[in-house]
Image (spheres, rainbow, N blue to C red):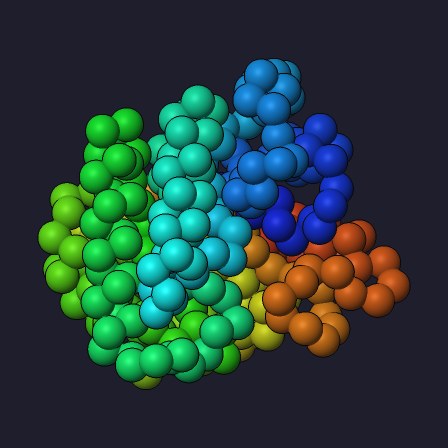
Length: 271
């Protein structure tokens, strides 16, 4: 397995500094946050090449593909199309996708918003397929999103979209809240699982909460998971929608990322 870190957890730290840390710590790559104003394609490629890192995936900004206002949905689709162009230019094979983070209820009718999300994702998926990119629907907990909260819901959604390049992104922190059996959720997602995010039950380093990561790793092995694992832990503190906390939060995140990598590598299943 390849291991990476979502650079969202480092806040506004410049990419070169983050890349140097990841390479020094032993990570294989990075998941870039999708703020397209931050990056120049040539600079991204040069920085990551210099440190021997791959772009494993992209995570989007909080645009709203399910909004009842067609103009808002169109702006969200347009953003994703630009994100796909960026992904193709930097060699990111997977782009994650989700509803607007922080919107926890429907603004109009829930079923209609679900249908809007299906229609929007179909448009994005068609462009992604033309660029040989995969689209991974991220499953978020009920306190961050109102549409896809469980692996079962995501599996049904992917079936409704009916595009071969659309799959699922599971995150152990969100699974800890929503799934009755996180290992069974992995088995249910099976061949649709494209990306796997990890943080412990309290969103801190793996090993600092109560999630059974050995069991999860065994479940990934059972489905022959061939994707990447992305660390997305945060420092302790309020407001889950920002990584920025009080004190030396960035130093804490660095320690958490390194601890998580050591934990995962030490517990890789042996055939």
